[in-house]
Each structure stands twice: as structure tokens, then as C-alpha cells.
Length: 161
Figure: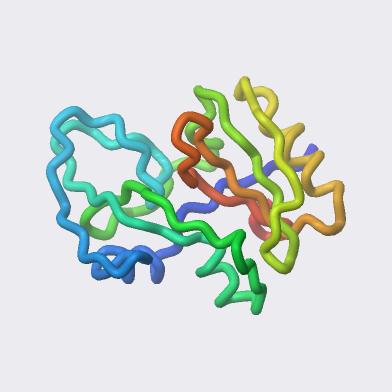
């Protein structure tokens, strides 16, 4: 059985986002009084009192810079929470944020959407990833929140899978 690894936002991108986000804004990091925000830097929920930032993030734009893909209108920019300061990253290999309905969205090497699947239980994630990567045209998948459509994390073929 293949194990799939959630990829947080990379360290270089996080450094850039903490300065100026992908919409050209400088973040104003608040203290998260209540906690519970899904952090894309360490793939866990924030604790009460942590300093976090809500930034605009364009995952396909950044991926396209690495790969030469041209996502065109499929490039999306959306809000994500990250720690306001550098953190240690994920503490575990467990898939995060599986406790709610999620969409596993598939992308081609060009960055175009090839389809997706609604995942309703934590047990469905490995099957959804296996199904996605059975298609040789799928280069990566994004896991997104259904309720807001926000990017949660990426899984890639090969070293990310």
C-alpha cells in the first residue's frame, strides 16, 4: 500500500508570504485568541494565543515557477493561515485536516484541472489519492476545504507520494 504525504507550503514561499503575500499585501499578524485555524506551514490547527497571519496564496503559480507549467485561468489565489514567524513544520506524517468533507482536486503537468473527488471520511483519502495517481496525466493533487474552497495542502507524484 502506498503512503501519501501532505506537503506544507515550502519554507521559501512562507518567507516570501510573511513579507508580501501573493496578492501583493503585507500581512498584519494577529494573535489567534481562540485557536483552531488550519495552519498550512505545519499542517495543524493553531493553539490559542499563537501569532498567525492570514495571507493570499497562489499554489499553482508557485508550482508553475518550479515546473514551467502554465495554469492560465486555473491559477487561483486564496486565503491561508500560517504562523507569523518561522515554525518547525509538520511534526507528523499523518494526513492533516481529514475530519471534514474535503475535495481532492487533480491537476495536469500543465496546471489544468483534470477532475476531483469529494472525500467524506478520513478512510477515503488513500483511495482518492490512489485513484488520482492511477491517471498518468495527473501531476499533483490539492486537498481543499469544501466549505470555503481553501487550499489545505498538496500531494505530488513521486517524492511527495
